[in-house]
Image (cartoon, rainbow, N blue to C red; front, side):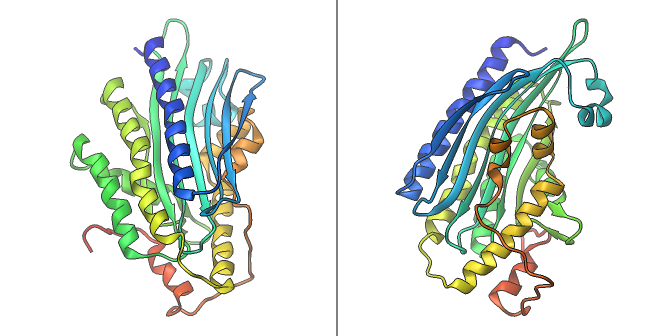
Length: 304
């Protein structure tokens, strides 16, 4: 059973998490600030979207909170999970995407979320989900190791296999089948988390949400002032095209948001401000642009 007090605790954490992440990213950027839009969903709920554009380090970044609810789930959700049919639902979470200016500074995505579906005379169906992943245009192994060290440190208190399991889930989820490559260098991805009870599941979700800044900000700080040329910038825009392809073709959160009548501008804030495609682009395998391919597959960065 999940009480209203527990639901309120989750919402309070998510709102504070949005505040904390925005404040820290503004400090890391040094110039830009997040603009907030509050929105209301006609069918129930709403949220607050925060977007930073044309900062010093961040070309565009969004950190969104949403809490939506309704009397029935969209057809796509009940088709895969028929037990949700006939239940009223609530979904709340924080989702973010950061697209830096510098081609050597990686794009990053994170989200944490809570879902509950209820109906009279039945136990509620609930779970937590979330994770974070890193999408570099030019990969540095030391950045990859740092990223995964933080991810593993978050997971270790919850069991010796947790990191390995959620790392694999991330590699599997952020995979572009039509390109035969991962979107980036992975991280953590978990969903349907409830088997250890509400308090433990909520604690893990909080640790993942809070841990994102420990994983990402040192990398951003280290790479944001690296010198680059138009050649590297063009390649960054080309790699951003992969980000667009994944979000529009595969991302479940994008689909859920659009099908539940969420705010389109907020849902699509994950898109980069600029991207490019080039027909049959084939960089030399030994070039910096070609070497990223070695990172676009599942790797054990902590034991290589």
